[in-house]
Image 1 (cartoon, rainbow, N blue to C red):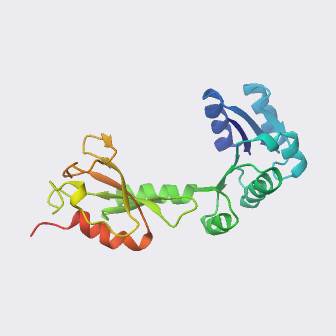
Image 2 (image 1 turned 30 degrees about the horizontal axis):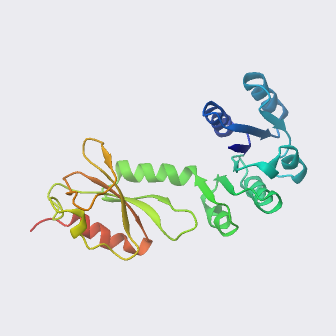
Image 3 (image 1 turned 90 degrees about the vertical axis):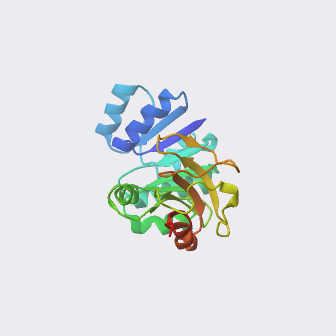
Amino acid sequence: MYIIIVGCGKVGYYLLKALTNAEHEVLAIEQDPLRHAKVVEELGSVALSGDGSEVAVLAEAGANRADVLIAVTGHDEDNLVACQVAKHRFNVKKTIALVNDPSDEPLFKSLGVDVVVSHTNTILAHVEGELSEQSLVHMMPLPRTKLRLVGIHVPPDAEVVGKPLHELVLPTNTLISLVVNRRGQAHIPAPGQLIESFDEIIIASPPEADAELEALFTRVRQ
């Protein structure tokens, strides 16, 4: 797989190392001369100097044969333009962009960026999961759908404890994707699988199903 990374700050640098170690063909594009020189010095000829949002630079990088472009600069406008040029000028199938300002996320999605990653929203999801008393935690949206992944913690005295998954009546357009037990073991859900206390249920669902799902998995026995 050929992957182009636009931006070689901390995020781009570690992506470059990880993807190279995974034996992908990877090229980073970095506009800052000092940062570019450091990457070349440490990792070899795996970085191109230039503006990754420009057509000529992406052409020099071989974007016409790239499978994925990942834009992770510190500027949302550059990340968006790089993805737009890659997709519409070079027909790159998959574009991934870092969004530094979460308010820009709807724009990125509306303009066809395949995967949008927001550090802020990721941190908030972890904070919600660790610190909030809510049993339902929003994890991530699913690209090109109106669904997102949510996690629900099953309390020990919930009505569903001991029931098989196939007996549950789930909301419309909802699918249980994964069940993680109290020992941290993850299982693809099977019809006869029983729900246990302290299970974490990972579900793909639309936003309007949140209340119904939370009631289903956390309602306490009377």
